[in-house]
Image (tube, rainbow, N blue to C red):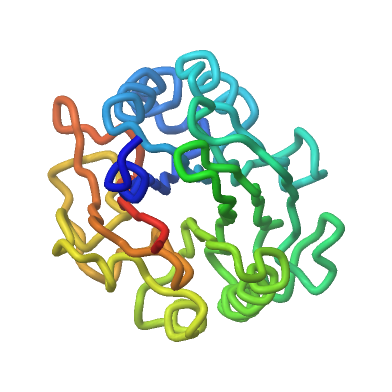
Length: 271
């Protein structure tokens, strides 16, 4: 193999996607009517690793069946097993292998299930340590979903996750994906993005951001949202160079596959 081939960067495609839990009240937008579209979107955009939010166990198993090229790890937020929504991480088996994994709760007692601070519901962060077959190196992917009600909970969750990334990943590259339920003007966002150990991938992308600012969109393409509805993010540690960043607006018959838009970034570990 030539020296040039040996030093060619190996970009990693990273995505975050709130799938919207399977709610019968969603009618035509319930999971059974859109699961194939979600799978098709993922298949077409080919993320190497992606975090999902609001996924119930049967939704994860539907994706597992439709996309056998991916493995996944996650834990139900209610009991650490199968109960409640998951913030799961999917990884492409042909490129990435799991070396370690874990889940902690966004609360003052992160090792056990329970609500934290002024949160409305139980919230978690799941993570995986991965070996990249393309580079031979290891990296971490953390994935989470902040509370939609508790302002203190969001702020404290940001502090907790930042500390956990630093303690768990150490000097290794790390990615954080998630629905933070807050916009870039918030304290919780600034706690993450203004820390020297973590950067908002959109802000440091070598290629200008593609797509709308908003990531929360409802299912209806005709409803327009603004920058304050940017609540889904990809963050990376400084070992990564961000090549591209996009909010994807794939739709069919004026309907999005979820009420959130997926966010996609192409990143590479600096040599």
